Length: 338
Image (cartoon, rainbow, N blue to C red; front, side, top):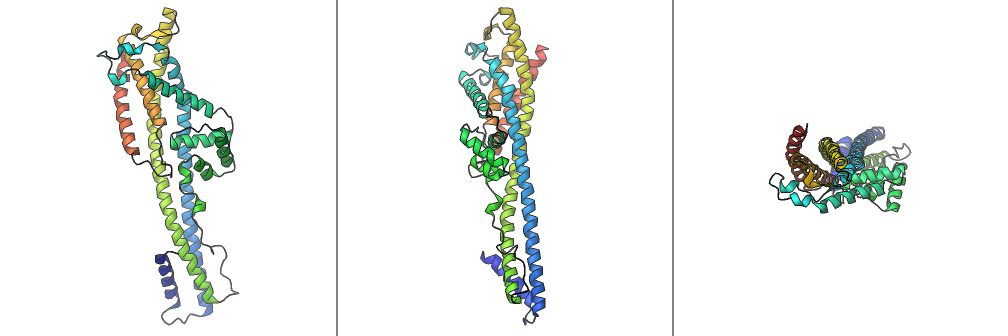
């Protein structure tokens, strides 16, 4: 038992006994029962509060993971399909009307396509629990587990309600403070017995109270971390949601453009040179948004030991700044194409 808590417990006991130590056995037992009730109350209140915070983390991660999954399923997958039909884009890299950072990069396109392919492979198992475990992993670590055995194991844990353990298999958020790692007071549920000496009951209650305080402090630390992770998760969730709304419009318009030229030229693939200046800009900024979204999806919120990534806020600020710049270009392209 930590010395400060032990001293605190002894102080409580001394106050209860009084200077002369003249409390009767009945009074001593009553004091022991009062202290035991307080120990149970502060422990249970903190436990319930931590459980609510852990539930909030779980909900935030599942929501963010499902958003990532939806983006990979729809707009990012569609973007890969349509942008891969626009060929020879490197010819326009030095065009003054297309900023270098908006130019196509075939290697980056391959990275985006690889992520989409891994996503399709990961979620093809059809196991509800496995899918939930993979979604949590995708949200927190930015990575998709592709080992079928690992997915299946985590899925089974989720089905059984062992969310913390399942997340732990993926090195994700809920593994940082499983409640089982916070020891409950060893005598918390044994109660105060009238069959033993009053002094022993009081000593037992003092031990219970000190251990409760120790557990409460640990749970407070865990709850603070839970709150921070929940806030960061929703921060990235909102950014990805906003970016995807703009990105989806771009993808739809690029699809229309490519289909128009494909029908006109009777060709599945379209030369970049055939597109108008604004159409080229729209294709380029759509690619830039695709890679930005790929980067966000791949950005881990947490370290392997369940702590918030040290540079997470800096990463967010950079991605948000780039998105605002890209949105200005998108708005100009879409307005000119109307």
